[in-house]
Structures are given as structure tokens and as C-alpha cells.
Image (cartoon, rainbow, N blue to C red; front, side, top):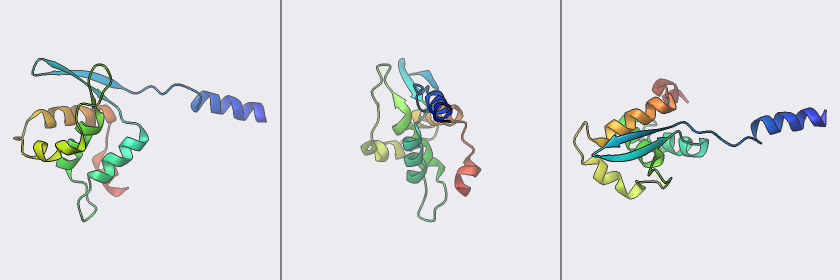
Length: 116
């Protein structure tokens, strides 16, 4: 019985995590977007809710860009201090382009997220 438990744990927790990622070229620069881990996904959802607890899609796009965009070397490009600057960008900016790509990479069902 203990051997089966070990086999099951090794097959799940013992494996190196594989995150989906995609390279996006914007303004002649390569940005790597990466599927978030569960901790970052939880932070993304929490920071994307308005005061009524509903999902705010602009906040979702911004937070997904902050939490899921990396340099090709693996360093995060954006930080929480960039939120105001991103909010002041025009519709259709890099925030929407990257955010939409990240949402697709995450396969997010926004209605399901709002209900949870």
C-alpha cells in the first residue's frame, strides 16, 4: 500500500512542473507569456475582482500581464507599480494583446471564475 502511495506521489508531486508558454513579439521585442502556477492564478483572480466581488476584465488583463509576462531569460517584466500606467494606455494596447494571449494560454472560462 505504501508503495502505491509513493508511486502516485512520484507521478504527480514528484514530477517537474511543465508550464505552457508562448513567445510574443511586440515592438520588435520578444515577450514570454507563461501559464501561472496556482498561487499566481489565485492572486490574479483576487486582484481582478471589484468591490462587489465581480470579475473586472480590465483588472484581469492587467494582472495577467503583470503576473505572466517574462523576459526570454525568465525575469518578470512588469510589477504591481505599473498598474496605473497600464490603466492610462489606450484600448488595444500591448496590455490587451498580451492579456488576451495569456487568457487563451490559461484557457480561462471567465464566467466560471466569477462564480467561484
